[in-house]
Length: 250
Ligand code: ADP
Image 1 (cartoon, protein in one colour):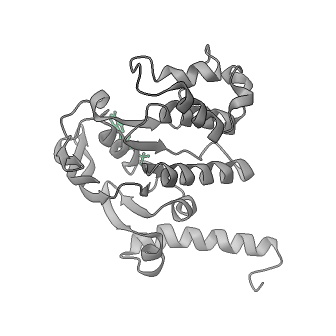
Image 2 (tube, rainbow, N blue to C red):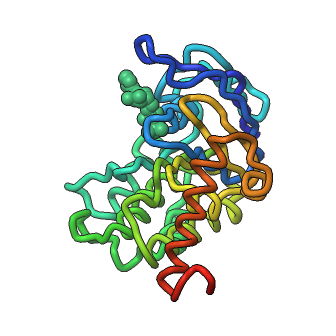
């Protein structure tokens, strides 16, 4: 279980996160959902250990990891732009994360991740020869082979669309459930959060607006922000889809 207790962060005199508390059970997928600039990525980086919080505590399986450096915390992230190395092929990118971790994973286990992500035909390709969805899968594989205790994803679907987006969504869900891997993802898209997560943390201007299951949020929105930002966007999307098929009365 991961617990955040009263996490706060300022950049200069701007309070970017104030008093964030939540508990995430092992194997859960949790979305951090909010508008651009609301503090989602900063919170993800604080959990990773890349950014220091000013106040608060992070407990992982009841150990206080607040001061544990990133490398020792054992969590790992897929960045929004994937951060793949253009001079290496797909396979060498995947293995790159293991540079200083000899013996932590067998070649057979690496192959299992490669097969699961259907990357076998692409291993010798350079990064510029891969499609957006293939790059995303290479980035996921590179992070998964490090066997993270928590998987962090920064806007994992933002560069993808259509069928590819749906297939990556399903894969992320399968990874979390099959490997019982706690997964925290950042998104600004309510539909993405609703369809991917066990729980959603809605952040508004650095504060928790609501934390709950998609059902909670749909049926029991706790405040006007949730109603206007989240539910209205979902309703607008629904209406625009209906209008494509002959009007809202369909
Ligand atoms: P989100 O991911 O929700 O778009 P961020 O966490 O990236 O939001 O940013 C929240 C706020 O913190 C923004 O106003 C952003 O400009 C500011 N910010 C983020 N990183 C830094 C930094 N390293 N230095 C100063 N301000 C930052």
